[in-house]
Image (cartoon, rainbow, N blue to C red; front, side):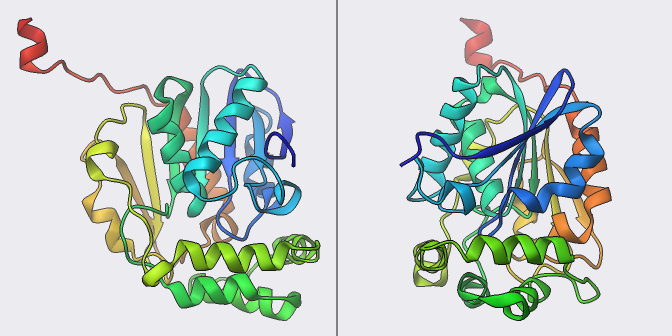
Length: 267
């Protein structure tokens, strides 16, 4: 078993931006977004535990162990503060990383993040997990996208290559079953989200068929929210240019100042 999840490094700059894909994805889905940012930042795109080159690595077993494994890898690379970008399950992992080690996270950009409400289209996720071959993978991606979105060929190709690895398909099926037990997903408590003081941007497709956009209504007041009209759940593939610009802007925002409580101020 590998000690750390696999990551592709590219770009150069004073900032480091870390990209975490969603369930069933791989590092290659970020290709167009990463290219847009590579001239101004160091880029790390991970294969999450249980996916691709990280099929067998530390961090298997859910979002929390995956978050710990990626934090350990960042520490091993001797990186300071990083800007986290996570989609879907990767958004849940990024959030847990920020909660576990807030001083390491300079900003948090969450694309239709998991864990922000119990509702999930479990049947659609399980269909995607079990998809094999170009036709099924493309159809599953289309079903999770907006009504006028067309899955990019390079993403379909990358996911098909990944799923041909021995053990990968069964790993996805097992993970999907564990993630959607009782047709619900785990939820990150709102009280914990309130403690995050780095810039947080949440982006959600208005036509998301997997995680209802209504989950964005209960966000802490200091979170910024961007709705993408006509987009579904697969925001990275549906609007890479927009996502790159949102990430760029969020990495330029300053950490909010948390006022001390009255008790603390009086002590």
